[in-house]
Image 1 (tube, rainbow, N blue to C red):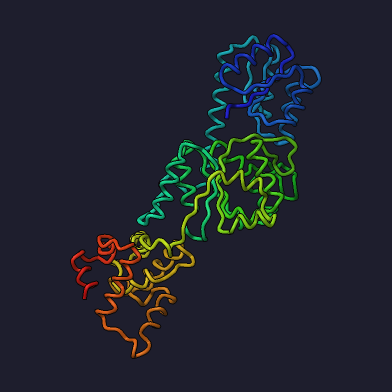
Image 2 (image 1 turned 180 degrees about the vertical axis):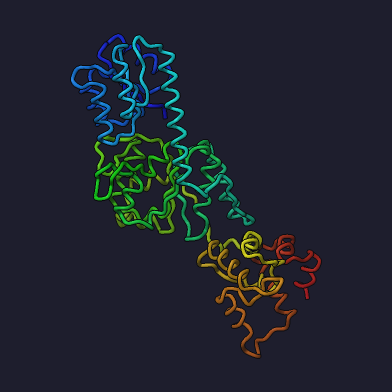
Length: 443
């Protein structure tokens, strides 16, 4: 968004000239002819820069500066002064003004000062955003061997230039936040902030303050102005995870940001304009929440320009073993272990398990196995108890005990069926040749 500049100057010709030059440079300008009107504008709107004459009717530039500082307003002030009032301008800088310029002034010099201010503000904003997303770099890795997951990635690719809002649905742990990050870092906003917030982790009061910030004195303990995540995400993306947990009040405020591009800080009386792309996610049945009036229908339609459903891990079994190996080699350095992979029986159990916690649970399983395993391969000893019980149930009665060959054949057929009869893929997953797979199935 362009820098917003308020010019307060009682000489009409000078005011019009300044507004024309600044507008030509691409700044969003507003002009007033006295200090009182300038203060009214400052309380009604948010500006980045105030350029003010030091002597004006109603309120001087120095008085404006004092009120700005008293109210903790985040705006930089450039003082315009006549030659004889330079001492006052210098004193104003000691009290918080950014700079001053002497009449008759060089317009190029003024433009240079405003440009420098814009650069400083931009760097400050990027630094604030960087602190908010520390640990969330641009490298987003999503392993997708299954057709269902490849379809998800194809959909994200197809909308990378559209900048549309969308809703990600799916069970907990399927990777909704990863897909949101991928969408941001492959979009035209990729060099701008990506801010993520889990709406289920905060109380309504804290969520309000976290999202929208607060003014100094808004509540006990609010000693200074705090920017909210909506403001920090300006020009970038705000990812709201577990959107179904939002209260009606917060839902209404989010809707206002989407529809009007503005919001109020907690305790604030002036709107703050932003340009934010919203991506939302939920593991709940959002349509049921809408039908029971627990989630606003208008907000649902605003967020759900497109829905991306991420399937659970149990229905994309092609991803299980590749993910298991990825998590194995990702976590080995952390524990200083040397493990060469999984035994065949361990692989079989991993494929049988239904992963109620999805990909997140799979990583936890592999990490636990790395910690506890004492051999050169991950064995059955540290596999999920539910899948082990399935194996035990199949073998606990003497009359149902199968030979190793029968068990191998059943397992191979099961893998083959899971992969839609694709023998090449099945052989690859099993770690054998197509010929060996054919012999096992035919025996």
